Structure formats: C-alpha cells, structure tokens
Image 1 (cartoon, rainbow, N blue to C red):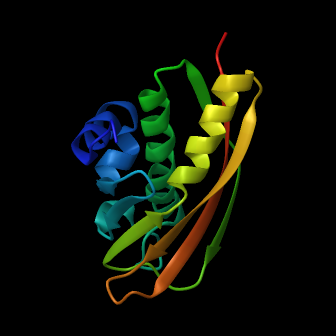
Image 2 (cartoon, rainbow, N blue to C red):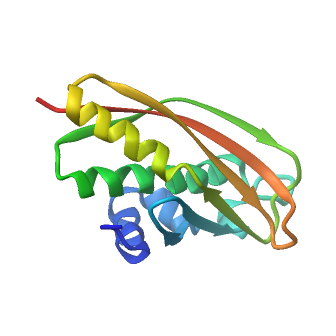
Length: 151
C-alpha cells in the first residue's frame, strides 16, 4: 500500500484536526483492510460518560477513507472522493479503546479502477465495525463513497 499509518496520522493532524485531537489514529493498513482506533477520554465524551457518537464516526470514516485515499494514490490518477451517504447503528456504550476495522479495500480498488477506465462516477458502500477491548461490537458504520475521475 502506498500509504502508511504514520502518513495517515500526519494527514489527520493537518487536514482533520478535530479527529486528531479527539484521539483518532490509523493503526494498520493493507490492500484489503484498514484499522483505526480511538480511546474514550474527557475530550471526546458525551454527557453519559461514553464516547460521543460523532467521534466514533470519525474513526470509522477514517478506516474507510484511508483505503480510498491509498488506492487513489496508488492509481496515480486524478480522482475525487466524497461520502454521499452513511448509516450507523450503536449496540453498546463506547468506553475504553474502540477499534474500527474496514475490510472493503478490494471493493474500493475495483470502483477506482472502473472510474479511471470509464470516467463515470462510481459508488461503493464500505463498512467499518467498532469493537471494544473485549471484542464486543459497539457500533457499525456504513459509508457510501463516490469516486470520479477528474477531467
């Protein structure tokens, strides 16, 4: 993969400072998956003493978006990316460290290859599952990414 977790975290610090200061970090990236994580702390909590849902969303989106950015960079084509829709479900209070895993890397690779080839916009739903340290699912996010070759 052309992107490393350290590069993604540096990008986050400069381009997504709210995610960076909330503690969102990329931990691992490969062709097929990306892992991000965020720890519940004072700065990212809600009034119910658990992690604010939007912080979970930032970590989940980064796990999908890092794969999109990495494949765009690998392809060396000018491709725009945008989240068109998202869905989320929450099943448990998010406390401690929450780790998000997206395993849809090959799906977005195919979508980017298709838009580069055809010039048409392509959409791709990607899922990120957030688990606590016990392995219990706390939230699941789905993002509909739209990619399109720039003229």
